[in-house]
Length: 399
Ligand SMILES: Cc1ncc(COP(=O)(O)O)c(C=O)c1O
Image (tube, rainbow, N blue to C red; front, side, top):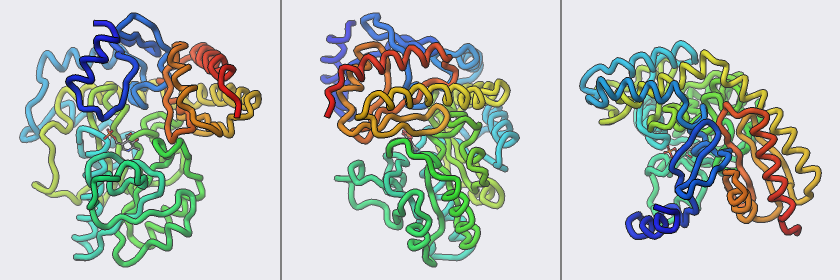
């Protein structure tokens, strides 16, 4: 089926939650993908920070193939071998003492919200349930994570939201401090805000947040769903920030493209849940866990994060060169391979032009071009991507 036929079938049979989608991708290899008409693209979005090893990486393909031959699913009523191995690997390479597995980012955050409330309830009793989140944050679309999200545009129409979320200004410790009361039990934030426009926290802010949480016995939840697992140049984002979180949520890249989410926690937060308090049918099932084990093994054993840091520096310099030549680029920002061009006018045309020239990027917050390429891209891929960007930028109408 060609793209036109797929478009009409898509609008006939699928709920319109994603708006008009120009492409149907049918194949991928490394940093390249191909659409239904056979056209090739350089993928600088990686499924929104999911395909961190590129498409169809042999280690992921092998893990899925081998696991699917022996056991795809069995339920968490039984111990799951690759799930235990995955948890062990994550614990041995992180701050965490124990893990819990979900299916997606939003579910990982739902679980973290429950964990924080239960920790507080067990220790302090009723009434200490508020969670401080950040304006411009994004934590997911299910009701708890949606309520924790600091963007009205995604919440509109779904009120009443879950009670007990308050919003501070990102990178402004005083605005957060003001919201803390004897009702507060946790702080949740993304070390680098993704959907909110690729905004890194400052190291100082995260250190102050850590001290505030220590002072008030608040659970510090870092949502590393988009910025974790190598993306910003360290295995975990908290390592870059040189702080120890209490809870970290992961998803996206974790399964190498197979859906899985995770909650990592250090003691005593790792022992808050008791039997019956939280569960999923699919969370960390054999197939997803095997794929995730393959991803984290590559990440930890092959220095993927430091490679991302190095390539990220190279790409950042190239983007800064572009910004120096096009005055409608207001700013280039980000960390590692989580980068953005901030324009002073809507970026939709630029994003579409990049696509038609064979480069996949993303447009967020209307004026921002977000780049989240596979962490395995080469400098030649960066040269090619910036070449396409340059050609698209040169056609951009100046304001
Ligand atoms: C930081 C962050 N948290 C949570 C989510 C939600 O993840 P999912 O779409 O897997 O539910 C996202 C998705 O973009 C995200 O970027």
